[in-house]
Image 1 (cartoon, rainbow, N blue to C red):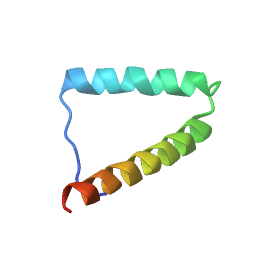
Image 2 (tube, rainbow, N blue to C red):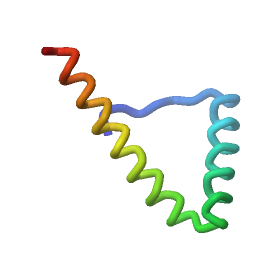
Image 3 (cartoon, one colour):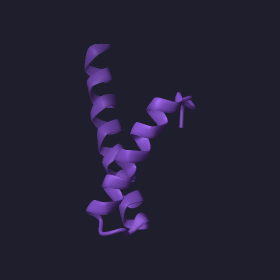
Length: 57
């Protein structure tokens, strides 16, 4: 992790709502939801890294 993000109250509430929705999609299985989010974030980071590599060339 490169940085820690600070959220204000409104952002925290929005993030909480999205997290609850994501867990609901996984039928309440928080570990399954967390694992999928980690995988999705990994794929997104790979794509961002690839784009950043192209931009520096």
